[in-house]
Image 1 (cartoon, one colour):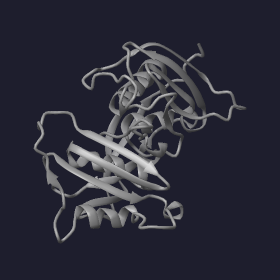
Image 2 (tube, rainbow, N blue to C red; image 1 turned 60 degrees about the vertical axis):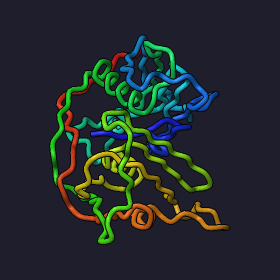
Image 3 (cartoon, rainbow, N blue to C red; image 1 turned 90 degrees about the horizontal axis):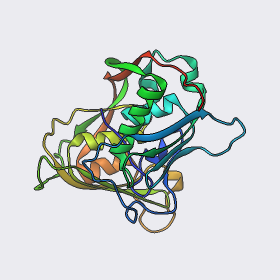
Image 4 (tube, rainbow, N blue to C red; image 1 turned 90 degrees about the vertical axis):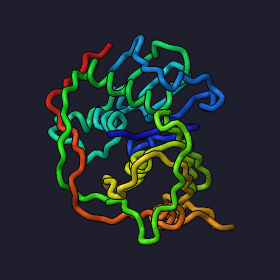
Length: 266
């Protein structure tokens, strides 16, 4: 399973109903980044319950420093595994209700990308919250991503099929513009998962890697009132990519928690 992004590359997508990711004091393009093949770990990390009076929340990235403010374990799971809250099962009540502060330094210089942030959050959950979990398929309401009758409007990538995919997201005045390079269709599914109200399953039958872009308005109430605003995401998919979303019930990945513990404050 996969999913996400960093503000200025921004995902953790608008960020999850839970918060947002910011690259503080610098844009990711301007900051020194970790090599894309790097597998970062925590050099040091402190975890403690959130101050109930705090109004600051979200994910913050500043170079090799990563901070989580007022985040539940459920929110961390959503980031780490690219899932929605309804895809978390067997969770104690505190997983959804208790919020945590996390401050840590990576073991390497440079700003992590979205994939590396996901790895770091997974490691945090295992090391500090003693998470043990497994994945099951369960039937639930989903959107099936399919190809329209006119066929998909995707360009086959000529880049190295073993190379790393690239995704760049720009947001302005309620509109999102995403450019994909050398990506499998699953990376589009990941983006849609974060933006829609139910999981998305891939029923396109498309394999390989593609180059394409998508411009859409997620919240049409915030779309520009003048000019030619982008369409909503459902319409944009059909018009720009030859794909459509169909509501249905189907099997989707669910993270089932076998064990999780509240860490001692430090």
